[in-house]
Length: 192
Length: 288
Image (cartoon, rainbow over all chains, first blue to last red; front, side):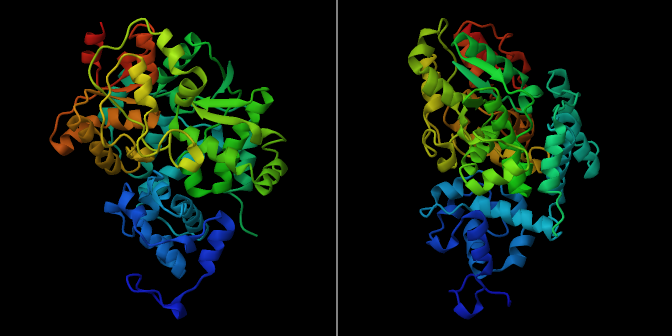
């Protein structure tokens, strides 16, 4: 599909509705209801650092421009604050679309431009997969090592340690097998 | 009143003072909080960011554990956990999702019936302001407070089904019942930067900075929160925010349960006030 300029009115012969239908089917979110009013972008907590704003993201879903959606930086800097969906007159669940596209990016091995955020998510899931829970201090340390920011927040970590805010112990769920099985059947499952 | 209690990971480490104060004030009010046996992490924000079914599954397991405890309601002091638990509970209304998680051995019949409420909601709707007022022995006389709700206690409204997402008042009303004065302000339901404190600190410094600046401009001398993530972002990053904006804030970020405890006559130490990074000295001095 040719790259489409989303600033211009839609040309019907340039539209691929398959992504739109896929999102409607799997997430129950219908972007056809978009009024293009821009309330989502107006309220968005992070629109000022987004490469593509929520209103444009909805537009790109309508156009079927999956490539741009999977590669955009906004996919990873969305803070899931839920302002867009609450202010949308049509209640379009944009955060759900963001979650869906991130899941899809992973399946297609499209890595985030801002690797630090994706790595943090992965390390957090590693912890849950192994123990069923998350211990903040070990997670932050592992993240520093993986992203080669060896001294990040060292001073803050010290202050928090003396306040007793860092628990060095990793708690564990007893029936962690059940949690592991859930991982195996969802995020770790290889597509047949 | 017996309610299943889901502390979440933060309350077992960084937010220990939230856990202690929540338990003590609940006990004083006759709420029998029973910690969910063998609970697992809600996954926020990593799980829902990367796999929908995993996120729903993790939280459905917790709901199922509540059902096994023969309880019909779960409460959590964390806004993130609340949002994920309640989202799962709503997703379980879909027979396909329910059957699929039953097939995986995560849930059995009845898990979808477990009600989810944030602890603030329990205080307002189950206990009520009248009973809270009756328990106040030492009214909160102190600095002006900014009630900060953040995102997930009231949003998205279809999930949270609590208070008003644009102009929430539940926490203001609670603090006023304790004798405190709250300020009207612009950023009570704006985002603090959520789960990005470690992974992209600049986002938290930016968004958290807006929240602190708005509270300062409204004349607040402390912020009151109902979420360990909001507390951690605004408290632990406050020095960085001050350096970034060239503005000294010195705003203590206090859990609402800590202030309930002080008004109920518990000591600052019992409420873990000494664990806050930005010291609440002014508040404690005025409260006496």
